[in-house]
Image (tube, rainbow, N blue to C red; front, side, top):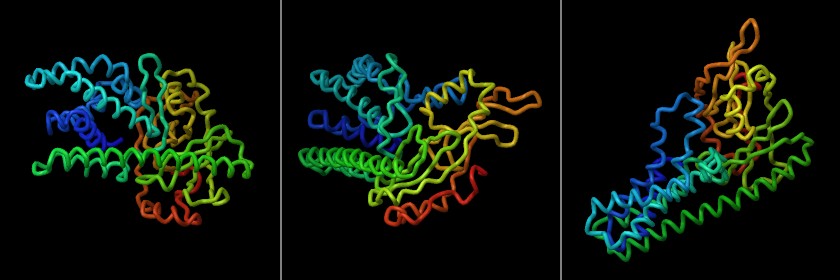
Length: 343
């Protein structure tokens, strides 16, 4: 999730655990710890693929938190020597703040290695978009009461708890919505005759009322949208070509295999000029994917391995306002105006 949300969640959890005993500094430490795991983006990784696939690795592991929490607790108590009697509570604050950060991240589509080093499996429920005001606002309002100096402690605790409760209910709603969308999609796919290898549903930007669909097939993939108000026959999917044969001569390269694994097979391969580009289909939209890598380069003697540089694609913001309209009207198309893969 975005940094503001993680700071708000950390502050809310911190205040819920220890705010009644140590006051607002519990929220402050919760906010600090809430953003700590994401500082791994500043580590000097060897390349773009490493930075992409190692993010949310060890820094988001429950096992790392279990061993790091006593050390962090010791450091906090060195600063707050008067809180020695709350050593167990401070440990709970540290561990829960870090853990809820990782759990929340695992609800997005990116992938979070919760069980590192036992496994690098990237858990990704994909029931939350990376930024969702409906989740963040209750947390911010609840913690605002805790930080406002003229609010009574009892009121602050109750409002902070209410913010956490409302945000948690929203997560439950998103899970229910995802199950409903997947059920509709399965019905639509069974009626369409599409050869389905795998599919994924993720919330559209800023909402859980509209969901983006990606379906992998042989030699092509499909992208579409489904609203919680849609019937299965309202779901339309647009087909796009992918050319995995471009990887044949470089398929044993570590970077290629790493990207194929991390994307869980939801990737496209295309040639743009002399470059072979692999795109993660889970994040972004057609012609505007967030993660694209130059995995190969076409030469006179064939395709050789590329430099794995990251390629940016500017999003088409002209259709953002139509997301709301698509929730209610299935006839509205959010497909890119460009033909096929000519991005």
